[in-house]
Amino acid sequence: MMNTSHIWKIDEHVRFRRLFDEGVVIHQEQAETVVLNDTGVTFLELCDGQRKTGDIISTMSETFDIDSETLLEDLRPFIQELAELGIIQRVDDTPA
Amino acid sequence: MNLKTAVTPESSPFIILPGSEYEPQLHLVLAGRSFSVGGIPQGWQELLPDRLLTCKKGGQPRSGRLIQIKISSKPHLRPQSEPHDLNETSHLSFSADHVSLVSDWCEAGFGTTKDSPVQLLVHKEASPWFADVLENVLRVLVAYDVLLRGGVMLHCAAIVKNNQAVVLFGHSGAGKSTSSALALENGCSVVSDDINIIEPGPEGWQVCPIPFSGSLNAVSDVKQPVPLRGLYHLNKAEEDRVKPCSAARAVSLLAGSAPFINQDAYRANQLIDILSGLSMQIGVQDLYFTVSDHFLQNVF
Image 1 (cartoon, helix red, strand yellow):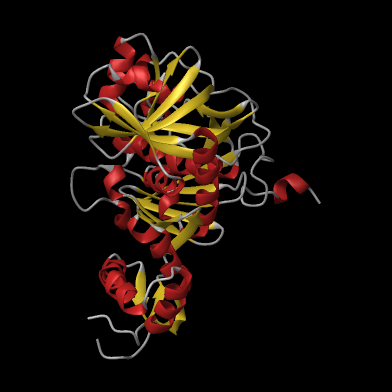
Image 2 (cartoon, one colour):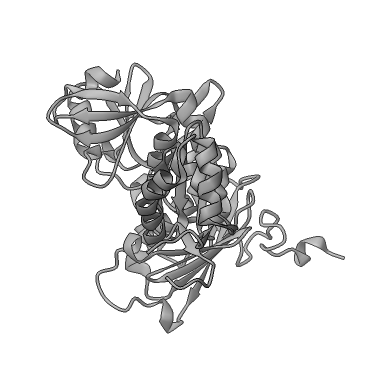
């Protein structure tokens, strides 16, 4: 279960690039590619292995002019999916 | 000091004493790139397919890659089981300036800079599979050399009409061979229905023929690069139509069809740069087709 104190970093085998209002993610180890929308690629850009998820949500809620709670609920399954795809990894020691 | 005797393939692959063990026996020109192969055991060269041997050139090339074969009896090179599908058993590993390939019967390593020599270790009993071994290594080398030229090797079909090429790509079973066969029946030419080179040419992006395996390569009459008109991602559907892809989707789809390079983290940004430029200049569209020749009206 994801919580706001989790800290995520992008997997070392992943490269991504913003292209206009979308992003392309390439996972080399799996030779797989994923396309993200503006919200998704913004989240990934902020996953620097240092910011807590809650801090990222706060930054994004200002950028997209949306309240934090709604954004968190929207992002929760997306973050879970990125983790399952091996695109991001947790680097904090908070219990899952 | 006699400079020539001090030279080895590692330090300068194209200053080689005639008759030495390093003298290449086979010079191939593939998509404008020169590959010289040395160390081929007697009788093995004749096992190569005609489509590769038709790319054979005489004389000593002035540049290109030297592939130095060494024959080995090391047991780990022998495959553990039949059959020997080298595409399935190939494993690549990467560093900042080097690529290693391990597959049934062989190991290879090469630098990623222009004209770096290639070391190819082949098991002494691999002669029945030598053509596959060499072609497998050449495929990887061509993919890297094309990248150096700002292009990309794509797993795709390329069809030609009125000296304009259209590239059709997609996952296995999406219809590359079927659409190529339909194009051929309708008077188009097929460059290849399996692997093609897409790279910048003097007049813009172009498709270059490459003699790797493909079910329609043998009937191809395309011998020179052809200007690229469009890139289409194949989707089987109940109606024929096209739909433009966004830039990110285009790059994502193309990257999925760029073998070898799409596994290499060290070349990922270069690949994305090239594919971004290609997709923005040529455009990528989803092609929904009904497995009939109607799709030709949408691409030409």
